[in-house]
Structure formats: C-alpha cells, structure tokens
Length: 152
Image (tube, rainbow, N blue to C red; front, side, top):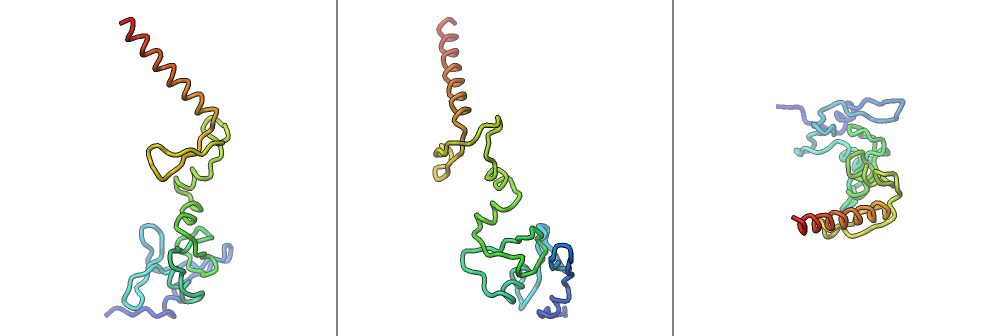
C-alpha cells in the first residue's frame, strides 16, 4: 500500500529558494505546473493545502493568486485570495495582455468605451481617431460599390 501523506511528509518535499523566497514543492506537478498531492483521500493542489493549513480557509468565491508567479510555489505569504477576474488580469495570457494595452495598433490612445456588438455583456475600448477613419472607409467602399453597380 502506498505511503499516506501527512502534512509533515509534504513539508519534507519542499525546497526553499533563497533568491525568490519561494517554497518549491518537489513532488508531482500537473501539466500546468501546479503541485498536486493526495491528502486525506483527496487529490488537491498543494498551494491550496498549505494556504489553508498556515493561514486559514480560502474565502468563498475567491481563488489563490501566486504573487511570485511561480505555480509550484506553496509558500503561504506568496499566495493571495482574489477573484478569478483579478487573477486572470494579473497573469500573462492574451486577456491580461489586451487589458494592459492603452493604445491602439496605430499608437492612438484608447479614449472610448463602447458596447461590443458581438458580445452583449461586454464592452470594447477603441480609439476615436481610428474609429472615425474606419467609418469613412466603410462609407467610401459603399459609395464606390454603388457607382460600380450604376455604371455596370
């Protein structure tokens, strides 16, 4: 029978990194880089177990954000309970990258927030200069199309 994990055996699987202060869990990590453990018959993420053991329960509706950005770190003071949205926007994914943008691809400041016609509950940030330029292009294309069909 496999050895049952106690909190003490899990503590023995931690390696402390002096440069960052992280506690790196040297046991199993899943493909996303999060340390996973079997504890009291359940498979759980190690950072959640360590946070709950040292700090207390994770508030309902919140997730733990690795402030150090190291997914296999289990040090409780490197973890902060936040909303899923906050956790996503602090990350490095496409959503977070777009959220941090302040200028359009042409270098103009995003100065308008308008409803997104595709996603009803969402809004989109646009630069008024490019929006006006695009509207003018659309009008010009329609006008040219009409002229072509008139003379064809």
